[in-house]
Image (cartoon, rainbow, N blue to C red):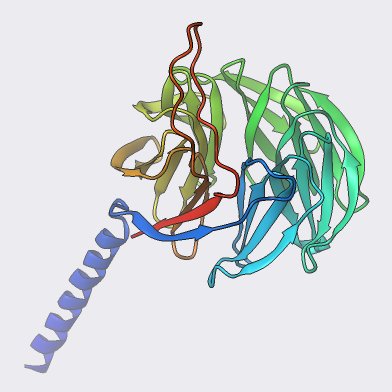
Length: 351
């Protein structure tokens, strides 16, 4: 009787463990709006917003908002401070070991240095016009600023706040991602390709086409399986690329208009893509070379930039209220909806 009980318990434990594993790897569906956090107008008026940066260690969220960076506590959503004195902020890169952060200011063609504790600005580093995407590469311990219009990358020594080099890229850079081993992969929007940059030698080692996607903008990476998730605007699609040879693997997936962010959640195998038309496309990584669409979540118009909270697996997007679309112009072109000043807000989606 005791042996039978132990056997039953062992078998039961096995099936419970197996069931738990199956559930853990189920596609992540059921995302819905959890919270909306409104903000006031940025100093100087107008309404412009760009990248969101999530600091998983310090549990802070950095939101680009025109002439400022808004900083929030990621658990209470209380304001942690504002970084002001900017002209047109874009991205934020954090260097925790130095207690420093760097902000790209596209209109001032520079990277602004700030203190991670006080959020006070402590200096500026000259970049180039249209300084946009930015990242910290931990192996070379360098900051990389990607300048759109000049088709270049400014490489910065974050410890000394000095420029080490300016790299010509041969195309207009968009977002970039680091593999944690010294390589950086960056989208060249106008060339329909991804480039691989060795962060130590500062050499471009490869150029790979992203077809059947086009005009690649956003990028994320599965570092364990060496896969890049690249989303483009023309054609509007998501593709998976092998980061070692540039081969497109599996099928491509249609997405909404004006994509601007892709995130990858290694714990759940989720790949999420946000678009300016007001959608988040959520996929599950069934295998390194295969994705499946889980759901498309309706957000708000303009909510094209996004960040992932790896602790809660929530998705954060920001946008503003927009004026109604104007009538189509007589000449060829797409009419633009304008954001209403003072309506900037953060949207938090979760399950």
